[in-house]
Image 1 (cartoon, rainbow, N blue to C red):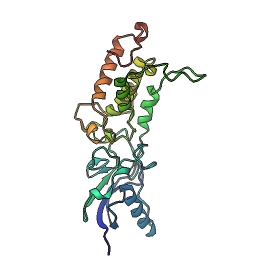
Image 2: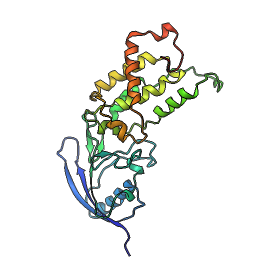
Image 3: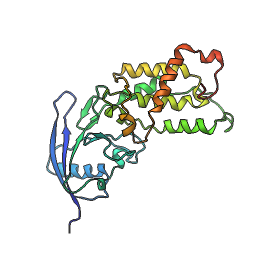
Image 4: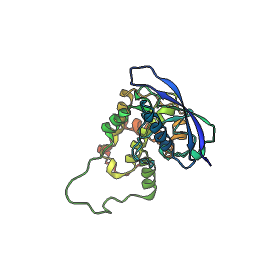
Length: 263
C-alpha cells in the first residue's frame, strides 16, 4: 500500500543569469511526510536525471539550519510556511496530499540569479568584509574572565549572532533591504567589549557597503523579522540606526567609551 503523498511542483527554471526563466511543472509521488523539503527535491532530481534531463539547481550544505546556504521562496514565503525554520529543516508533513507548491529563488537586484533557484549572495559577504570583525591582541591566550560581560549584554549579543546570513530578510522585504542582516552583525559586536575598538568605523563602513551593494532602504515593513529562520528581532535595526547617528557625532576613542552597548 502506498502511503506517500502526491505533490505538484511549479519550479523556476533559468539556465543562467542572462537567459529568461519560467515556471516548469513537475509531479512527484510517494512523498513521505517525514522527508525534508530538500530531500524531496533530491528525489525529484533523481527522477529528472533518470529521464536524461537537467536537474534542478538549489543551494544547500549542512541541512541542519546552521550554515544559511539554503533558501527558496515557497508559495511566496521565504523558507516556507513554518516560522523560525530554514528550508532545509522544513518537512513535507506541513503539506497535504495533492498540494501544488510554487518554488522561486530569492528575488533582489543584489542577488542575481546564477541558475534555477541559486542566486549570488556574495553581496552579503561584502558587508561583512567592510566591518564584521574585531581587533584583538595575538599571543598567549587571555584569561577567560579578563573581559567581564553582563548577562543582559551577552544575551543581546548572542541573539544577534544567531544570524546565519541566508538572505531571507532581503528576499522578503519589498525594498530588498539587507538592514536586518547588517543590523544583526553590528548589534552582535556593539554589545561586546571586544567589538568597541571599531565601533564607530564599523557601522559607517557596513552601512556604506550595504548601500553600495545595491540593497534597498528599510521602511519598517517587518517582513524580514517574520521570515528570519533564527527569529532575529527588528529591534536590531533600531540599534544600527542609533549607532550610525552616534558614529557621525561622537568620538568613542577620545571619550574612552569602553562600556559594551552603553548609551
